[in-house]
Length: 436
Image 1: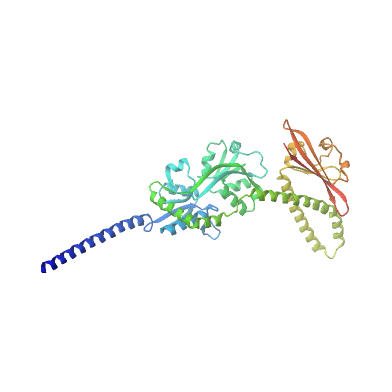
Image 2: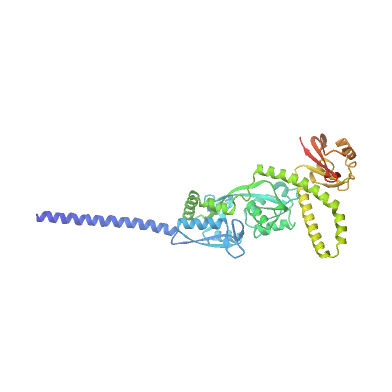
């Protein structure tokens, strides 16, 4: 009995020792695992750099806060993966150098390229970027990267645009950020700007200058946009990749994307066609209104001169009217210049008062305001004098004309602009559309 008790005690002691050893090993394993993760995250603050002026990706607001798509993405990843970050905004050139010199751990947004891939490692893409050529609206010379040869081109220093332009014999003018580079284009100090499409459009929209600039041709580059780190920081990139996947699965990524981009720059071709149709109708109506307003302008001035007591108020009203008229004319001029078809507007004497660039290609290269119906050879083209069209609201004809040594088929619509109330002819408008 005593032996049995001793054996039971011995077995209990052995079991306790084994249990203690197994629990110890278990905690040792967990500790190593925790330390490993802590090394990557909790026990280390990751130094993050980004461009201080690259909206909407990353930029310093007027109140001094650092914000943008990249900033929100990195902050959210740090939250879901449980590590601390310190975000430092600086110029892009300094940001790249600080990562190269291992002064920081990651750049929160960079496009992988051949040269960069030799120096850094990259996360999974957080976005897709387009690099494009921006020119002023009236530039019809530059259409592709080949046309940049010998011309002044602005870009952001240390940006991927620098690599794009390295193969082009252009006069390159680098600036510290894309805002300053694109401002050179607006100030007409360069012929083109090469850079990120979204950043360029964001800045132009912010300063109400989208109507002054256009994007030429297809994107020069379509690249993934990722978070970058030094080659030895693979563990950080692995953790960031996990965070990116978690943000996409949870829907957080979509919320951040919609916050900064949404449908701001999406183009719906169907809506665009409808909008152009509406704009054309508005254009025709506005032209009629302008002619009517011009007709009554002198009568209004005479009436204003007679009203002495209300002279000051009338003067202010007239100033406002002239400003609105000028604004309306600018809108009409812009609509005419950007139309897909040729437009000519004649007064009642058959003198040309307005035309657009496309018309020069079809009718006459040396066309100018003041030309007449006869001097433009429209008698032969339309088969009638303007006097023959009196009484006609509209007239349409298909004609063949020689353009650049090619015979092309055109549809020409002629519309009489009338004062409906007095049934007076105010002029004519020709719309020339190429059919083949």
